[in-house]
Length: 330
Image (cartoon, rainbow, N blue to C red; front, side, top):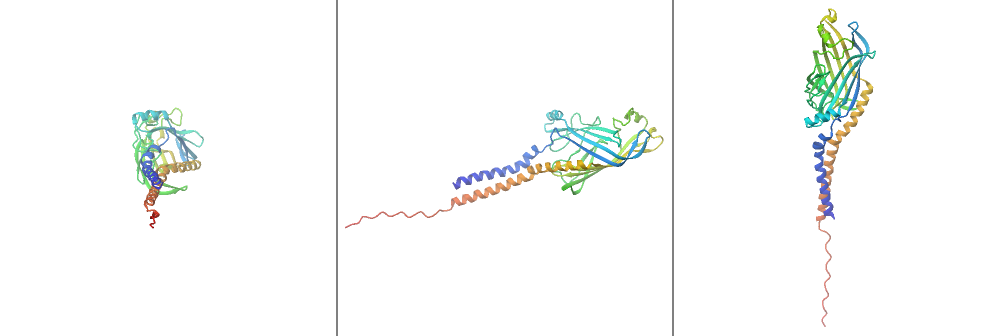
């Protein structure tokens, strides 16, 4: 019985020991993925911001500018792209909608972002765009990879349609989570006018005829939870100007928008709660279960060897056989 029990324990020890690396290096890349149908929204605000009044073409201070960013997964487009890409793909239709304190639209910029469901690397396919303009992303956007590292990443800027480094600036604590802080500075750059303008009748083409150009700069900051790669907080010090041309009435430049954009508190709380939940799931695949199975396999191996050793020990001495009585001779 000891021999059989030892063999059974040895078999389980081999099974759990082999399962440990399989979970980390085989199951994790195949199970940890962004769902193709994911939908998320976040609201950001810039208090006491500067905003251009297109009626008077003068900048004024307003109590609040609100930016609503939504990301909606297109399942049908994902499945279509996967057939040619040969891997799991997510297609996000994003929208950045900016409105003034009166609720009227300031700008509206749609995006289509196509990326690998696990690594978050861009996947170049038909439909990749910003505000209707085809683009080719060479860096991440919106989300960092699972198991984010302490290094710089390439991050895509939708305003300039270019990719630039976003720098790792250290490890911090945010709402009880260990996070990596990243920062990117986009210098003053000439950018396109949004195709949807805030004043009816004004188009990018009509503005271009006046010789007026649009310029933009920002300091972009993210606090990223490294296990999930999800930003739990983000903010921007954002500035836009209109420069030159007859539209400004002889002025060299005018501020179109300037403000310190921050996530709204209720969205911070919901994002942190979601990230904490997803973080546990990722840790189960990358740490808790692989190490737990490895320790369990080692314990079962030791137990099987102990049973085998006990089975080989000599038992109690066999009782002496009784000698047969010899015949009595007269």
